[in-house]
Image (tube, rainbow, N blue to C red; front, side, top):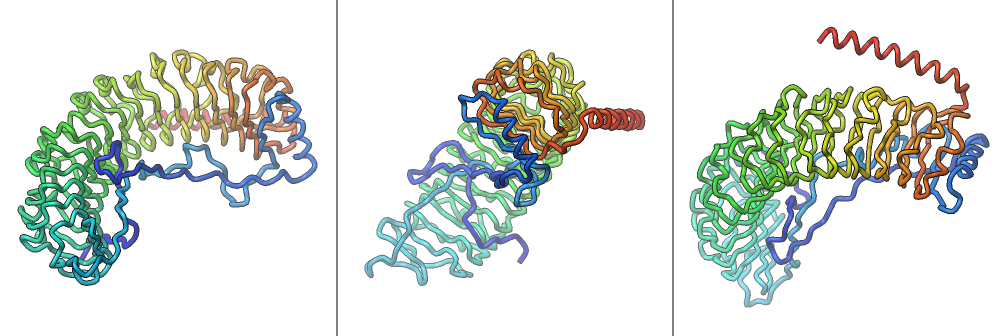
Length: 511
């Protein structure tokens, strides 16, 4: 039988609220940076001591400085946003109490564990047939990690108290379920059918459902009437299937006024599906094949707060300037991993977090960040930005910006005119060759500066550069100080930049 059946941990649900009493919210920990080691060599130690003397003496600054190279792990250090899970989201974990063997008076299927509280655990016992003799008072039934191919008619007809049903990691197919399989489960709130062999969303689902797991199947279609009766539905997980936009009926989500979290990532969507839930607040459409964003793709999703369109194939010309005009409540927008050459026009002005990492940005279009006074975090990591594309006017309206990540670009100088509100500045993995005395004059509130793996050399850091930064806690300059001649290094960098300019001009002409 085909299909992926990871016999491991129970699949989890990205969520925002708590539909079941035993739920708890947990956030995956980000990957940590490589362990720091003491600098090697007397010259590196001397530079570390010198830089400590340059910093405000009363603050106890944490300084990471060592000779060029890598940590013990052999990997270069990344900014917090580079160390990320590309697919994982905050998760809702339903954690029922572990059932034990009940007293002899409780009817319990063979090899299963039952409790007087109504918890029945038949998970991971290689079941090929649906178990009989389930206690009528069962409210939690675990059948995951088995080999079930079908559920016989009437299997749940006596389980009117069932609230949670776990069927993930089995071999269930469309033919193994009928329109009445779940219909009598009038109390069911949580249904997990993930990691099976379903090619469509099952019909006849209970109207009481709040959470529905359908990820990691082979689902190709969502019909017009299979979800619409479930008026209580809040969380819908359809990621890691084979959905195309035309396979989702325009009325598939009609009337679902409580549906606020929808996961459609890891599918084959070539465009934003039409008829999205009107009250959706969290929409995950990353890792698809979307090439553009039309004017009316989000025209009716007024309540959207978090939109993730990362790792698609979106190009700058294919983003309509009015595409985000209705998203006045949007707080987080992720366009990372696409094919943008410039920031698209018409970005929502009310966002707090904007991520455009790992694109092909060579410039910030004039006025692209205009009016974005509410922006708190801006991630431009891993693009092709140079200093000439980041003039002081680029940041003019960002009066609330606290974190700016421009790591992994082609900067040769520290950008000027940065917002006074800035607290964390990530500039690692660029080609910066000097820190002049006025480098941080416009940013007196900086708490962290990350300059590791640039081209800083002996004599290129001016003593007074950090003295005005009374709030500075972390200065990271690891992987610099090659002890070369400053004038030679600057001349070499200028020559490299001229050659890269010529290459870019030739590339533009070819386009």
